[in-house]
Length: 382
Length: 252
Ligand SMILES: Nc1ncnc2c1ncn2[C@@H]1O[C@H](COP(=O)(O)OP(=O)(O)OP(=O)(O)O)[C@@H](O)[C@H]1O
Ligand SMILES: [Mg+2]
Image (tube, rainbow over the protein chains, first blue to last red):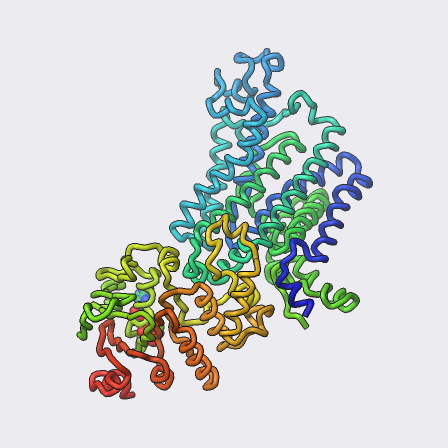
């Protein structure tokens, strides 16, 4: 009887989920900083910025069934908003007095611009820039989402359209060199309100800021998955018409899922810029967008933490392998994706709960075994 | 065409000269009928007669080419799908349409008529009212002891009941069921008939069904569709003895 009540209780965390989160928090907040040098830690910090994207994809793709192959758009826009602020700070009149127009970013000067374009002006202010980091990508996602979902465009067509938008945006950024820094992106970022972000100490601090933001994003996402909205997304993925004719505006929920994922990706992008010190169109286009989906698939698209581990593990593998076999990496990534889709559709997290949790369940009281392969799946009480 | 005198009672649903064509093919062709409050109306007819399409038109899934559908004082042909649900119409699909990955409890909860916009869904609380209502409905649809199971483990008949339960929880004034006993065992059919009689209080039911024994059990009135048109309408007794109906439908 207790099991049944537990299943309907819908607690914010089940015990296993809480343990999982604590282990993860200890790993990124204690273990990594204790055992990795600053260079490696900064690398992990970079991987963890991708985790914002994968957590968003868990909501959008895993729960909502909306496959976006364009998350690089939002990661990139968030990153660019941050980079624009840092670039303006680095382009003070004193720093750029050798330019023909001092006080504007160097690449503008090289491209014969003589004044700061209007859309750069708000990025003189940090609060405005931080707001833009969230608002610009989310508003863009809203426009795409509203245009597509209100017209009932979904599935493969939606995936292709997101990919096309990612491609167009990256081409646009590359082409408009004077406004965007072109193919090189926005580089040579130095200080944040006078604080030098290039020092080891700053990188150390930024790593922790990133970790805390990620943990916050995980908690927020956990809230969404546990709310009725999380269950509606799953229901929509399965039987869209049933949800529609139960009185819901399906398009609104899809738009929400897509915007939520975009907002998280944008925060990841901004933290990427801060930790890595530049932003470029190579993080906006098709390849990074698809890679993000692969991280999520590998980790488990129904598991928030699983997707985070997916981002970490694939990137560790990428760094290790592409040092030794740079040509083979892309093939390896493609093969990995196919293997995951065919063999473990629920990713590592799915494999873990499918093959290992039953054994753990035998060692512990039965109520702990009620975990299923996803946070949603409440197995029948035995 | 049989036209009931509109003055004799206030109908709940008034379908008037409704037509829809798909690429020139008239799937529904000038259909008119009334459904009264607290009536169980059954629509029968051969395959492809346009029965499902009529329900699609009423619930807004398909848009009419011409004609009108009045429900109380509203014209449904101009309303959004979720607006039609809010107006008080619930619809069950021909194939059981439930959420396999969710539990029976969660399936019913999604249909609970509260928190239907994004913000409402994020802040929805599973309070005592929700639980009691779900437990009540589960009792009615014979699934009280299956609430915490994933819906995919239900039998075919139980899935049909679950979907009926999902509609009941919305408490619609008009409940539309597309072949609710298809694929059910004899004893399940009996229980479904019992269920329909139980839930009729305070609402109308529009049922599409092929099983004549079941239709006799439940129908107050029967409408026969054939090639998109109303062929006959009236009591089961009347319809059964109508030579046109015997020829196109009951004869074989
Ligand atoms: N969206 C659509 N586009 C084109 N043709 C359609 C569409 N919906 C229905 N039809 C056609 O309309 C006709 C009526 O179909 P409908 O599903 O309403 O029949 P039915 O009476 O419910 O039959 P059954 O007893 O087999 O369920 C069929 O010939 C069908 O092929
Ligand atoms: Mg049909």
